[in-house]
Length: 386
Picture 1 (tube, one colour):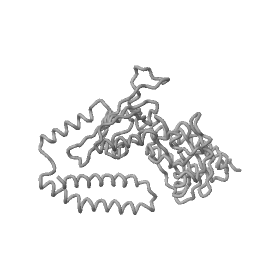
Picture 2 (tube, rainbow, N blue to C red; picture 1 turned 90 degrees about the vertical axis):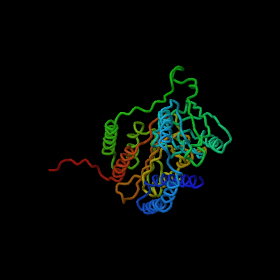
Picture 3 (cartoon, rainbow, N blue to C red; picture 1 turned 120 degrees about the vertical axis):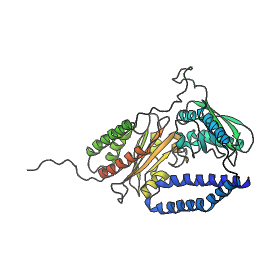
């Protein structure tokens, strides 16, 4: 039994490291060699240690089971997935192990994306510490807990999270089963009291529709850049920001330059702290400074570090104050080996869908066009000669 638990812990640690390796795919090309070495080391670990240990346990009869056991496990998995309540299985660090169909609809997050990520990433920042603390208490055997939290997709709606300890038969450690239930609709909300909360996932309009929307955005950006005054870098950034806001992003922040950056444009929602973010020094924003220095675009969904975009004049994290659920931070340069002309940062907040990889690629293409327009000295429109 001790070897079985040791094998389970090794597998769990290996899966966590694989998740970290997947997240390292966005590192600059010069650093990919280090990531590749780490991946090869992990493969060697599987071949040299995990596989022999698995074979030994299998030969001793500690792994696998009879057909009835497999049928029972299949039945339990089906019940977990089909139960009408939003349910998630997490570990003591609040990392999602499994999430059922009702939970994916309730949170608006696909199960494949949620697995391996902290469940706290889907909550408001103010609720994360309390949720982690209660999860750890349940996992160490202090009894079941219940608390009220708020999802980032609908901050106005309270959600009751009930946590109970669970020890799956094949798991080496105690897990935590989380049941999410919508609370009472707050006063002043548009929804009628008898109406259910907006728990259905966003409608899927199809890849063709999404692709057409990206093409329309690229066409609008091209038109704006071609008609921008030549040589006026600030005007180019302002026009580009105007195309992206609000049709594509809730916030658009443009910083000119790389070594000596200055913030030229900030567009945000109505009644948002736009002036505070405009007054922020770009050098105090770690994401902006990294993009300007390394020239690598960054896509983050439900960013874990609330201070990754710095603090405002009151000392509050900008990402928290702007209620950011996903962001794109893209350097502006016309050639892959050329200098960085500036940094463009896009925020989405509230219930809006997070930026996708396809949208990040489209913004990366537009960023090159913006950089070329910023360095253009004469108008591209040429009249006919003699």
